[in-house]
Length: 495
Image (tube, helix red, strand yellow):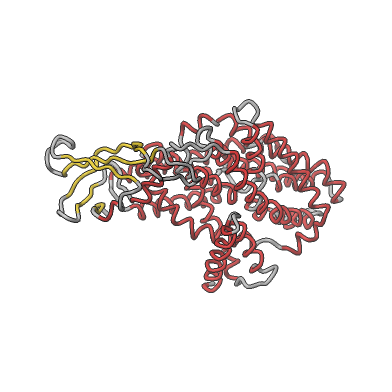
């Protein structure tokens, strides 16, 4: 398995570099690498690697959903609440309807089998969409209206909705008694329980991190371990109650961000570095699951069904955004952002075949074909349209995040030691300020830099008086032109 892991890293990084050079999303290159080295094309991936592929992909998905949770500000969610609710269900319902209209005639399957196929195809891929939305959020794109946050949150709930519908259709096919209303009630119940089982440990972790000053990597590992345990809890309780554990993973980041933004940003920065490796695992291994021969069997008819489903889905997405204050460019971006399919299709595409559904092979073939068509096309479309449609403010607050990452600045409450004088100080105040841009400086877009972000930090000499701020204090202001904070200071931790 070690050589397979090395191959994932080396070939995945190479593909990522080459595709970025071509101004294309690197994840598309990783998917293609996975398809080529997987067991269905060149067969270079070791069997033991494929046996643990599902666990690796789940951990990688947890990493990106944690990052998503640490970006979910409550005020932004409040602004996009209604649109997020409609976007989580309406587009998928339209797509299922579109597939049911054409699949029976074009693929020669029953109406119920078409409904199952529509439910499988109706899930947007958080593995593809979430990283791209976080990239826009990191760069302040779409920050004014919160569109990336809307798509990020709605796409996660969308998966819960379609999986429940798929379970209903599969149960109806089996001929057993299926209480449709009880099954539909599982949708809000799983969302509620998933959010709850994330908020509770998230709050406990916040209290733990504020009581004990741990190093950021250790905080991050604890958060990751708790998140993985949540996904186990979903499996352990699935026979009794439904739990949307991936929503719980996002809720952990949300509650920590709500209670302590400094701690949340420190953990988020470490997750950002961990995502470099997790991204390779996720997309290469998703690609390795794709059986090209099976996809080929779907042929033109399968492609036609997918395209009709996407057309209906696009109409549903557009309708979901009516009256929400978005212009036509932003609505078009949302339509394209809801195209990519990969995660759910790879996970449940073969379930009908295993369950003895007569057209199981056809359903699997179309599901695989949908990954090959929509994942790269959707990712490329998101990247291109996002740069064109999303607003961008020169005074975006996300520029302060980049500054903190570059200078490795501490947060309020942390203790630091002067490397020159060996004295210990505590950070008691922090302010974000805008300074006039230097003559000749330009932004990433080539425009003149009118203002640049800076962070002013107030230090209090630890032990100088009983109450922080009443004894000896000093202030320093850090901008992008300053060296790293750690050139002169060391942050002190309990563990």
